[in-house]
Image 1: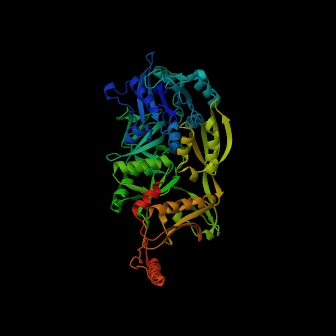
Image 2: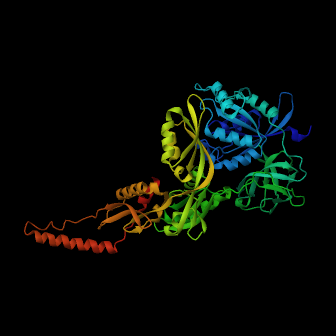
Image 3: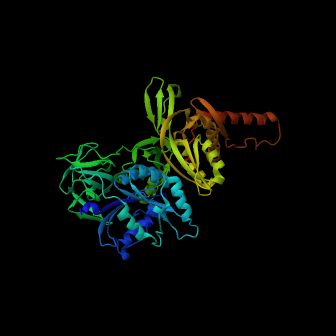
Amino acid sequence: MSKTKKIRNFCIIAHIDHGKTTLSDRLLEQTQTVQKRAMKEQLLDAMDLERERGITIKCHPVSMEYTDKDGEEYLFNLIDTPGHVDFSYEVSRSLAACEGALLLVDAAQGIEAQTVANAHLALDQGLEVIPVINKIDLPSAHPELIQKQLEDILAIPAEESILASAKSGIGVPEILDAITHRVPEPRWGDCSALRTLVFDSVFNTYKGVICYVRVFSGTIKAGDEVVMMSQGLRITVKEVGQFSPEMVPQKELKAGQVGYVVTNVKEVADIKIGDTITHVSEPAEEMLPGYQEVSPMVFSGLYPLDTSDYEKLKASLGRLRLNDAALVYQSESSTALGFGFRCGFLGLLHMEIVQERIRREYNIDLIATYPSVVYHLTTTSGEKKEVDNPMHLPDPSLINYMEEPTIKATIHVPNTAVGDVIGLIIEKRGTCDHTETLDATRLILECTLPLNEILVDFNDKLKSMTRGYGSMDYEMGEYVRSDLVKLDILVNGETVDAFCSIVHRSKAESKGRALCEKLKDILPRQMFKIAIQAAIGSNIIARESLSAMRKDVTAKCYGGDISRKRKLLDKQKEGKKRMKKIGKVEIPQDAFIKILKN
């Protein structure tokens, strides 16, 4: 029997917090890949943020040697995948490197939105899905109910599922046995040329860019001249090896194996996730399927609170970009906030993680502007543009129409909260396209929503309405024509660029009024009256007035003629008028922080 037939490549897919990383810890223990004394909780989650939040941000492959009860030796390659919807492309590339997937379902919480989405991703890629019902030792566990859900929702027979508890190790031997017998041997090995899939990459200060790869056919070793097929980039291989779980150099990587390739490339952005590596001398005829360019979906301005931290912020973004090719940024300046960067992210979680890492790892206090998405606009002359910053919108008279991105969302909700959730969808300008009953207590809502509307508080509201039982998964939809306008906030007649945003016309007035009221409470009073206005183009749609600080000029008059008092008040009025003409309003930094945080 060839060695390839003894290789099993698999991944673990699940909804957030269903026990993926804990199960991988048990598998490492059971196969004795990691000694008990070196073992720690969440071993494959190396980042502090991953450990705190219980989420996987970066995928971590690991090779394990396993001997079954018949004495047969197998090589298991586990590719741990990120679980959040922002990283769905990385998940799809990790799945493409496998032949099987352990589908983990929480015995207490049941099938969630991302469980379904990830299961469909795996089935679409032709993977053998092994359902594992985890946490069966919890008092609130209902394994029989979950088995019925597997049959009803995913059409997976109940008898195929394995009952387990990753925490206590129940069912782990059965899982290892299922991997050996149910996961197919490596596929697509019949091609004579080298075809290697890049499913992730990291930057190492000493070695350069390290590609995480799965070899489908051929052999790759140190010294080989290879080429990245999507862009024709030629690379010299410096070192190859496997993860166990640290990097261990090997002579070569053969068909079916998962490992790493050290390159002479210095920029992670040059290595595209999903690309195919082949030999320069004997290239493959076609790439491995599924490659696509990843583009950012959400944009936000990041500014340092202390303007002297600008260079430090620039350096920290540069360092983060070394390990995160999906992060894009360019410098920009704002009259209100000074110098900063316009950054593009895959989604809200990605944005949150980047900001948190900058605050922690580089000790920079940040202020982030309101997140925006990429809009398509067509001018009256027929020119098409992409806009991600409200400040770059042309004059309204030059815009023919605008289009905004939408998402196709799948929302799992308890029966008791359906009315509230549908109300929330309508409030966010969404439509509910389809409903499906999951079981006696839960429903699935399939709906279309504008991406812009779910950026800030949609998930929080969904969780509070459903008491934490609601879950959502989404994928990008189409661009839809929409009545969008640029909302300007003016203080004393001058536009404050940090507060500008692109909103739907139906929501512009309420948002403008809310911002004006907020600013009225926050801004310090001046010696003259200040108008705080919200405007669409030249049309003022909301206004608040911040009254002036006044000195009591009539205090020195003891009775006497009213005309004396009138004269003093008129003189003061003239002074205020003159002051208003030449006066400028300086908006303090904490006002921006208070507004943008809300």
